[in-house]
Length: 143
Image (tube, rainbow, N blue to C red):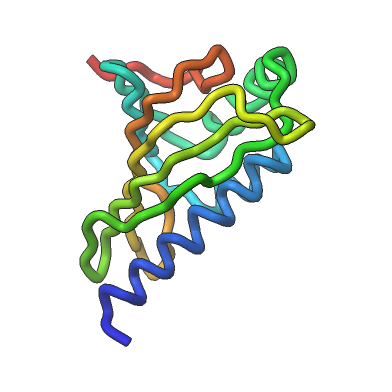
């Protein structure tokens, strides 16, 4: 197996573990699949979380917002590798926020960039087209 293929499989596995943690609302599982500082571009706003603690604190408020919007889980609609090398992988993902009856109420596209740092794969940055009140806003805004 090529080094790029191994990297792609590692990044995909890391994303799926992150999503499992997100759906369980297990912030530690999410953090295990991230590198900090972690960055997110939503619209034209770039947010950065400098530490796992900062990410964790924002998740508490997000739990409330998700419940308010009727969220039950988030599903992967499609997931494609768009670029990769041995230490960095770009994943293009179509996500679907769903209610308890599995109906979609918010579908969106997102690009996640995974990197291998000191032998560990994790999400370093992402760009999302999610439009929802249930997003992490408690990050440091980058000008």
